[in-house]
Amino acid sequence: MSSFIDFWIDADTSVLEELVDYARMLGYYILCVEDKGFEWKVIKKKGVRLVKRITIVEDSEKSLKERLRGIKVDYPVVVVKPTGIQSARLAARDGRVDAIVLDSESIHYIDKTQASMMKRSGKPLEVPINSFVKSSRRVKAMIYRRLYLFYQYGVPVIYSSCARDWNKLVHPKGVVSLIKTLISIDYRNVLLSLSDIPREVLVRNGVRV
Image 1: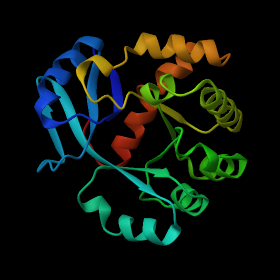
Image 2: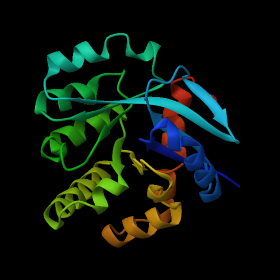
Image 3: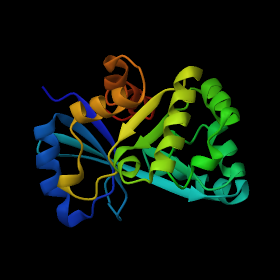
């Protein structure tokens, strides 16, 4: 039975149909898809629910505030990838932001203070697996340390693929195996990062799941 959610798909419209077919085979029933000018907010294709999302990349508090103004009218899912400490702190406390991305571009702004703020607000950390896999050894080690820190703080974590094509989708079992090799964590906690945690975000935003 399909029970998993991929919180970040970054595919063009031309490959979306094929990607949906493969995602369903892997056990995904919801895909959060980066906006490519879609007219829909939520749509169902071949038994898979597609939810429109936007990923905002900003470095300053001022510019991020401007981008967030009225954004929930158009986007059920709003995620921030901070490229500056000001935007990271604002994203941690702003209720319009659903998750914060940890990758090679944002890693320097994801620290203990960020973990503490996100713990207080219950805001998830999103880790795109494909970005992690293609990172340098040094960046992988940094991401591992951040992940370990955030688990210690009890911050919810979401794993996504950020797939741009069907062959970049990641099997849920593959995600579990990868994370278990990095961190001594019960596999059930990893599964929650692919199911219950992103589902709670969607339900909170009024998405029927």
